[in-house]
Image (cartoon, rainbow, N blue to C red):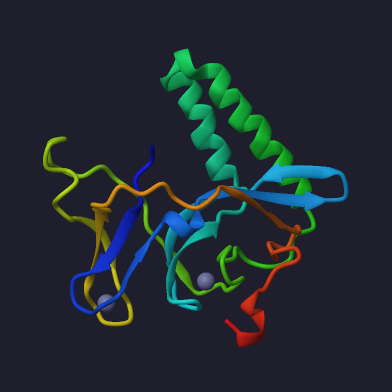
Length: 178
Ligand SMILES: [Zn+2]
Ligand SMILES: [Zn+2]
């Protein structure tokens, strides 16, 4: 069972968990459905930890191709990821807007790459560890911490987006102007 990961600020009372973002994110365009590529991070539009869209790039394709050489045993897994990236590229050919926060649709955010805690397995569920990202609002540091409680999480839902990254049949805060 995955554990919710908390993101906490060392200086202010900002704290949020990734568990409300669990589930699938999919672009839907007529009959076509392609998974959204995203990474978790902090969104300054909705002041929360949110999945943040990553648009297709040559850089990411090169990265995936590099993985095939590096990990030949996982070749078929990575070939599927490359196929998916090509599909996304084709689908988003006409895309006009910049990458969005998938929670609110805003553009003012920062990715927070996850990395493993620098402690042994015994202690990893107790100690917070640095993400390397600064909380822009207060200048504090964002730390990761696994949730201590056993938690079954919300039902995993699939969220659909159009090719501009706008949530279909959902509330988006683009009106807020971020
Ligand atoms: Zn803060
Ligand atoms: Zn947001």
